[in-house]
Length: 251
Image 1 (cartoon, rainbow, N blue to C red):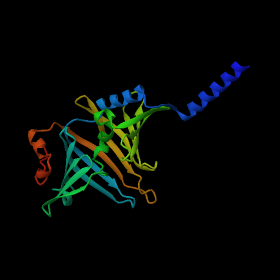
Image 2: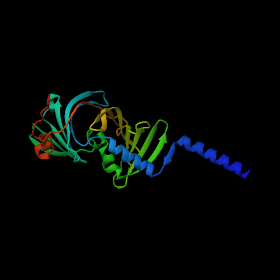
Image 3: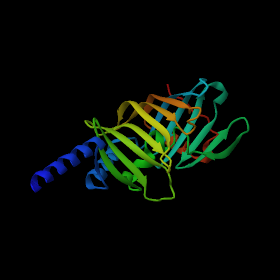
Image 4: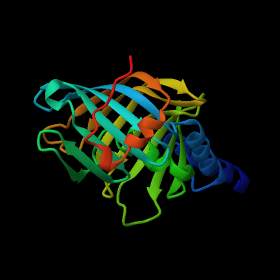
């Protein structure tokens, strides 16, 4: 009787766990999977031609053509090419810091890079740097995806993320970014990918801002049109002091 009851309890517990998705607390499986993703995903340095389409909550649509240059040191330079009213503007992103060059005013100003679509969240650099060492990680198995839940070890950084991985490739399909309270702030859907120098990166992704849920948030679609190696001149221009130098688009 006792053994039969014990089997029933164990079976019921297994069913309950299956319904919730199996969860492995900070373990070798979770940490190893995150480190594996970090080795395969994103890029070290490159020159990217990107089209960015932004749809506002009121339905208004704006389109930008931008040149993105990354040098492998964590810095990203963005040059705005189109439309004409934005041509000549340039931005430098370095972690949570950012600077914007305004050609009409002929000056560079410090701005917030935290919510820029092309900041760390674009390639998930902010969570994958150093193999995700700054985050505790929990692995959840949910149907056809694996979910890595990443929370910062430094509790002063309130935001945390869920990274959804395809079971077959173990590569990102979606990322959700939450406030410390659990409120969803941003969703990043990876729609297409491309391989560059042995690493995979998104060639088309969609970012949905959820912070202003009462009226909806911006929806941004990024499409990679061209990718090339950086030249020495490109590297020189990834600097706050060089933001006033206009971008040259290679044919």
